[in-house]
Image (cartoon, rainbow, N blue to C red; front, side, top):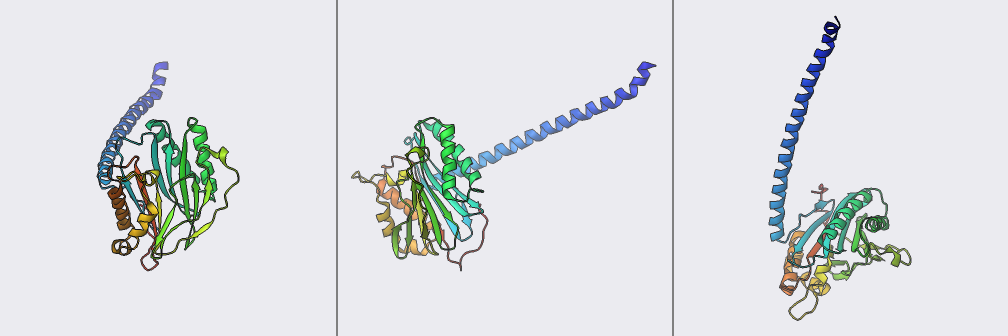
Length: 299
């Protein structure tokens, strides 16, 4: 009698076990399909990224409101293994924000570790830190707590919160931000801090200044590899001088930000030839005239 009474309780349990096994099998098959799909997408992205690199193009952030953005890359193969470049363009509650930085670390693994962690910290901080100084402080904390001593990063932070201005903060970044327009090329005003990871060198907090950045103007940010590129005679690439020459050409004045980025990269390579001692990255931001602008989502 006891065994008969127990039977109804056992049968549903067997049905549940069978159903559970089917569910697990279904999940496993789905996981395999997802993994295969992600692997396929990764291969597509790798092929696309390699094609872009051959043309000197890093995947452009595209358009954000009235800002058009282009990034160009020139590789110094086999060199610069103790340094790496990071950049990011972010849409935030405080306006569009851009960061360009050079990471100085002990070997490629450390460089990649710093880049991954700092980018994650910056992306998160951009959504609630009301100032560029706050973002720089978050990056500082990230570098200080997560990597070995002696690792640091030079960087430029930019915020486009108004219709005709930009706010800039430089953390020990030697290539100064430049603004090109029909009136010529000028050095942009910016707040200054020590490199990220060396905050103990700071004396006082900088006073950030709003710099005029109106329609038709192009902000040029670059990595150390651009400023340190050397010509045949050993002279470093004079970015401001060469940019001033390009800014009066028909190609620059009639082209958009993508064409301008191509011109500047081509000029850098023509000057340096094989003299690139480090990977070089150029990031150009153009304020598009209102007649040409339309809100476009960042891609």
